[in-house]
Image 1 (spheres, rainbow, N blue to C red):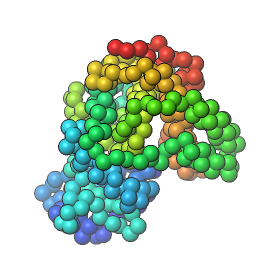
Image 2 (image 1 turned 135 degrees about the horizontal axis):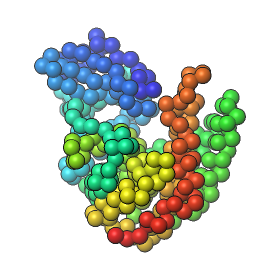
Image 3 (image 1 turned 90 degrees about the vertical axis):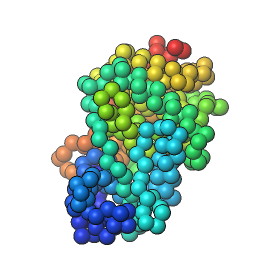
Length: 319
């Protein structure tokens, strides 16, 4: 899925020279679902990570790259892009943006490796990210608003699969219903929007880096917290120890208001719709004939049913 653009060694070498890198090898990475990512090695065997932004235009990619530097200066563990000889953090590759980053050593947790201690650490890191809002350039609302999800779901109407069309119809109804339940005036600022397990690198028990801020936008903090809980605290069902630990870690840095606790179910439901939708449009619709998609949208419909049944309510109290 991630290898959407090819970057041959002969083409990559002059591009990387602009970043002071004498390139020895370049290997495409499977990681990611939207962009093309690569592992680089220079002649001294130093490793780097490179990305071709496949969907974001220049303005969006520049905003993300600027955000990474600002968050790093605010103390958030991120990976800051390298600057080229021209003093900018990107190069143009045709009509796409290309950026290079230092390689950060770290492990990505599988679900079985997620512990309460990891969730507590992650919750605190997410709260500190939200508190860094005042230190960064204001962001827009991003590409995953409810209206954007509805447009994606409309596009599924032309799919050959009856199952996908029916799922899209159901999600459209749920998007409209839960968006009507959103509360006004929630605390807002910079949200990651996609803090899944593959977007956090660990070095032992500590977070080495938060990755992939492509979905970062201006939005309700409680929505971002809901996304993270859905990603980290759900196996076959919500896991109480993990959920409690993540909420405790978050509230140790930034206590949730009564209004945010009241809003949590609607925000979590919309997060489920968002990820079910993009798993259809980015995976199910792109899967080769006869092959299952790399990510199954139905997993987020399971989460949605649990949220709608009130599974989160017992945990939504101030610590």
